[in-house]
Amino acid sequence: MRRPLVALATTAAVLALSACGLNAAEKPAEGGSGPYPLTVENCGAEVTFDAAPEHVVLLKSAAVPYLASLGVLDRVTARAGEYPRAYYDDATWAALEDIPALTGKTDTSGHLLVSKEVVIDQEPDLVLGEVDNLSRDTLGDVGIPLIEEPAMCAAGLDEPGFDDIRDQMTTYGEIFDRSEEAAAANAALEERVAALTAEPAARRRTAAVLYPTVGGGVTYAYGTRSMAHPILEAAGFENVFADTDERVFEVTPEELIGRDPDVLILLHSAGDPAKVAEAVTALPGAQSIAAVREDDLMPLLFNYVEPPTPLALDGLEQVRARFAS
Image (spheres, rainbow, N blue to C red):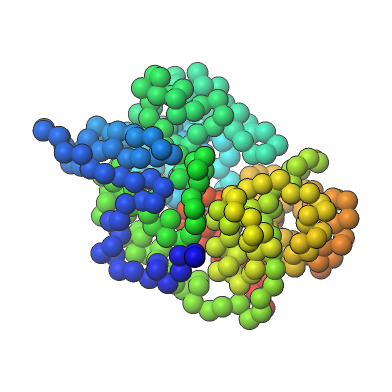
């Protein structure tokens, strides 16, 4: 059974619950300051902080809205990857612009390409986001802790939902000793979720969320272990891959034609949205798909859907506005 959306309409008094995928547990120590030492479990590993991180390197953009909400974006001393302007308000964008960028180079699937030496030379006390050549073990060998968004861990989340945003905000609040700010941010987020999910769609259609490879290649689809699933449900759609207990997986043109979704949400990390749509409409037999025939395709930046962050609410709002009926 999925966790109901009404569970989000809780009071701020329960916002100190531990995160589902990133459980924090305070460990008392003689002479400690504030909540430290603090140990959190992340992707099955224990990560200990002796103090609030002061020199953070971002390897993915997902954590930005959390850090901005907590007022700790100034702790980020370097960043790598794509940070599309559309995600951020003016104040957050100005803060990001002041952070030195190591590289924005990614592969065709949006995965960051960065040298481990470049990151290690920054001497961070926390790295946010794991990439192929910068694993937890690689950084751990030189004493640098790493935190990944729980949904992006190998095990992922069993039932991703809007409550995972609350949980992750709470945990970042604990890591940075900003629990009061986290509670205030969560109260505002819950009000917004309640407003966005209060009115069901006038008519229910089918939909799929895809990540096409621009220029030709693999097309990926998102199942029930992705944040795409609750976003589609909240927008009034039936996920055509609701029978797939995976976060993301390869899908063939034949499979898409067989599922025949009425609407397609097309994720991308950067670049021209028109090329993202073309990557789907150019697939063999694509005109047999209802969404393609009716031009009900919506390119959408990746973090508006994955992983669970406050940006998922912006994503839901955009999907509902685009397909309002």
